[in-house]
Length: 229
Image 1 (cartoon, helix red, strand yellow):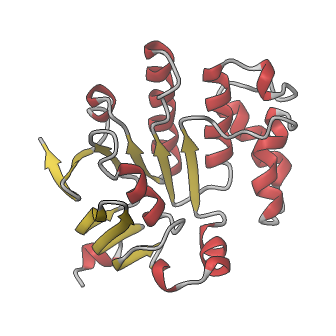
Image 2: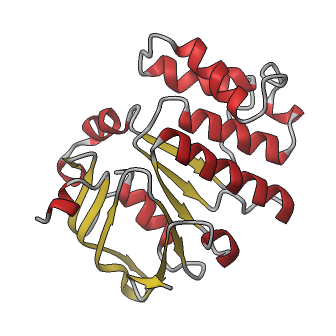
């Protein structure tokens, strides 16, 4: 293993994923290689159904590969059981999704506070308040998701993802449900948070304009990743 691969916060080697359907076996990922380092913003582009979200799920240990190795923060993810994967993700991995995935019965502050309390973070209250302040929602902490706009809900999701100070954040089409202007503001915010926290950002998107804002762009094609210039 090279020194560069060894220091990656997220790494995949020989990663393959196959599923079986009515038409037989379908290959989604085929021998994929990837290494992502601290503070790096990497965009993964590709057509719908090309395997981008599948890759994110495998990198985060939310799904099992058919073959290959997945490493997260120096630990082999694909050899851990569900409890081991959850323990590894706790505090080290953040997620931002297209549909926000906020709990509707919790306020903005409570949504951010929940993962901190679940991991026993001693200064959870301070971290939650600071995270919401950083995304410009200090005056909206007591509002429920239904009382917030789409852009505000995604800002809560970003605050929730970064509050535990993760090593890597996976964002799956984070602007997919937002208009162009709001989406650009969300990308600004994600990149600002990445820069200030030092966490790696892995951004799945179909929008090349958003991808251009990242340090590195990769195209998913035929189950493999190809660099884009």
